[in-house]
Length: 233
Length: 302
Image 1: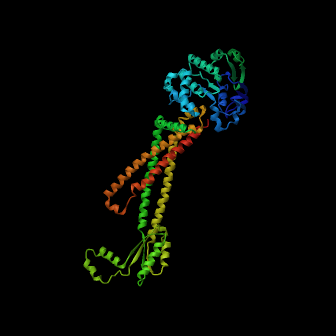
Image 2: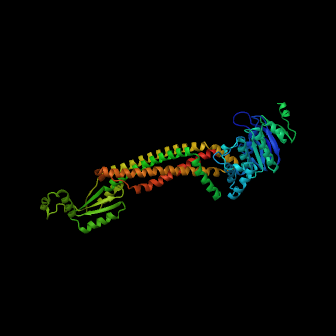
Image 3: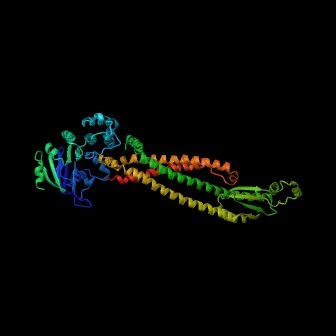
């Protein structure tokens, strides 16, 4: 479960990126966070990853207050979260297998399990055949699927996706969304930051809309309509 | 950390060298140049100090005895001198030996001239001890002590030679320390810059590792292994070059300047490289370790 209470984040220069946000995301939920550029969506993901510290307020993930996690324990905390980025962030000098296996090596998984688990994850994202390819040999969609396999290989309780379809064409974007839904159906909490209105509308999930650092609306499954959200801005 | 993880990190460190060929080459080149200079300078200084030491060792104090002294008193004085810690060697020359040596040196071509002194050794009263000290700095104090021993008529020594050599050795020591420290500092600066650039271009890689949940040690270890291996490669090359150059130069000087070699001698390659090799390897590995450790730390705060 993710609980944010009165969270604000200000950078040393400029206006606050997030202003007094409170929200709660239950285990197993699929939530979209939408908004224009500068709305604070990516800052929210960074706060959840403990890449940034909130200026005020508290963030709790699975019962742990992030403020109380010491620097040395951040790695352990992050291992419970799968993360997918817009620009895939694969290790360019390693092949598909090694990129996925890397997440397991980080948590010191025995080789035997890595050899079994990585092919299974690659099969899940439809890339079993391409395990020896390097990122530059893959399409954007394929790279993102590798990133998802890497995010999921340690079986995290939560998956954070920051604009996962931002660099993809519509067809690949839909494939990624289907995958995310499948992952969510297996019980993983999925939080997706996006500004792809079509996808958000079609997916029919809970949608939190942000604008200039505040939550504009938080709509349950089936309530979201882009036209409604932005009519008042 | 599990042994398999350490093995994986070591493997990654080696692979990183191949993956980043250009920066690896630049780092190896910089380390090679710096260690070559440090090694070369050390060899020059060490040989210089060896020469000074040799000159110091050849300086001796000569002790002459009272004319009516008995043989057993000369032996007692010899025992007293030999017991002193500052003494490295004592040589006794009797009056007859002194005359024999004098004859061989000055009357070698006209031995008949020496015949006139056959039964009347003109150097009969010149039996003496030649005393060599461990450290010339102790000469003055030791001469003062010698003058207190009864039976000693005269103590010959060269105060200026001793003090000049001592001062010279001191000066060479100071200058060499200063130059080696400067070379070392410049070396660390150049190498850490090269290593830093190599690591900075990979800061995104470090960031990804950290966001996936890698610990600092896990991220750092391959970089440290990489730094140490680069440092060791960078040390081996100048070691080989220095060994080759040193042997060639010594042989060249010994064969081409034979008269010169009567005055000058070199430290053996085995002796000097027993210091240079571990020193260079330690500097190489140390610089690689420190350079990568410091640079990676900058990028770990993700």
